[in-house]
Amino acid sequence: SSDKKELLLLHYATLFFVTEQ
Image 1 (cartoon, rainbow, N blue to C red):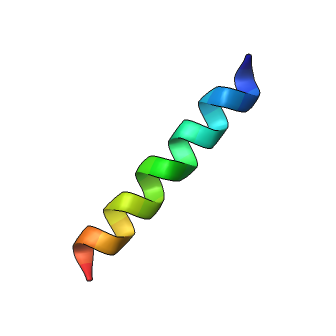
Image 2 (cartoon, rainbow, N blue to C red):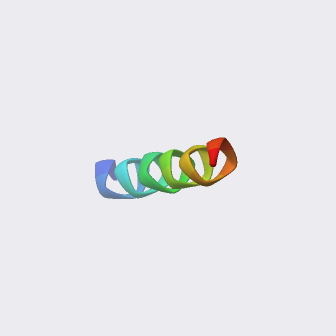
């Protein structure tokens, strides 16, 4: 469902944020 997609998007966003640091 969309819940899983949103969670995955959040996971990628966090990964990107951590990598940018």
